[in-house]
Image (cartoon, protein in one colour):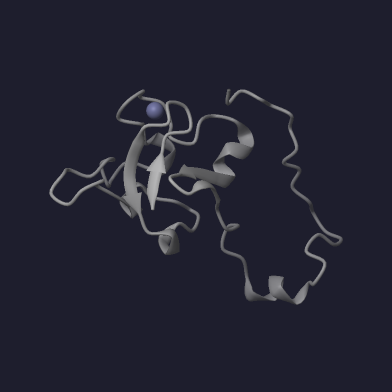
Length: 110
Ligand SMILES: [Zn+2]
């Protein structure tokens, strides 16, 4: 799968969907073609990764932009952060308990 920049749509990196589990690291992204340097320095935190073309973050800056990646297969939703296995015991998903609201209508990614 190819990671694309959400802002300039340039193809940036090759990635294995199976490895795209939060927290993301720059190291899961590989060169578009073997032999090229990695798209991001592996020691750079993902939050600090920058598109080689437009120098912005590949996911853009909208609050919910971090929940997905733009790829050659469309918008790729990222799985939720690693959760304890007991999370699977709740069939409703969002039951009682602390909820994280992610519905801020911030439409900056256009
Ligand atoms: Zn870009």
